[in-house]
Length: 185
Image 1 (cartoon, helix red, strand yellow):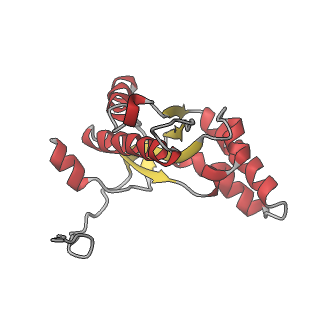
Image 2 (cartoon, rainbow, N blue to C red):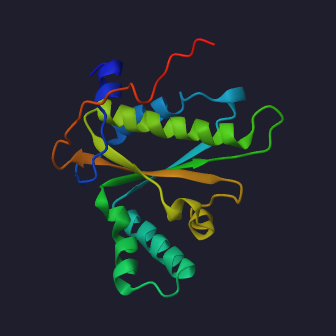
Image 3 (tube, rainbow, N blue to C red):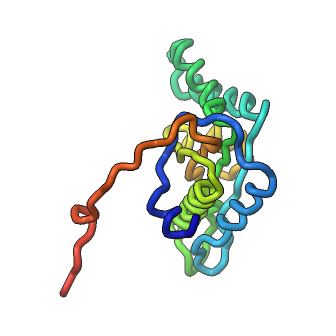
């Protein structure tokens, strides 16, 4: 698959099964990630790859964070939170490593980490895998951050759920007209 085809055919897939990317494909995906735009070459990202039983440990972190956020959370809600990482054979957590810099504001560092996440998603698609980029309250939860070894200034930009699509997602044609304009001054 060439680059343009990967760009215009990528679609999120929520229903994921094995196989997940193997070591060789994961290395290619990480090489793509670190090619993301990066003002002053700060390398403002960290990638945590989670597979196998480590997904259950991540689920317990999610569950504990929900209990702290909402002490009245029902058992069903806690169960759902605990099982989130089991929805895919691989989860890659992308963390923006935000640091004080005279030329590069924090928002640019977060955008760089987001671009790295997108490069992971695109390269996974080009290699024949599928995935979905998930966010939500867990991205902004200090307990989750701490459990993953992130500092207070770091920002989780997403949980990339990766594997093989259980079924091929339907790719709808979209018009760019409502999103783009040509400005003539």
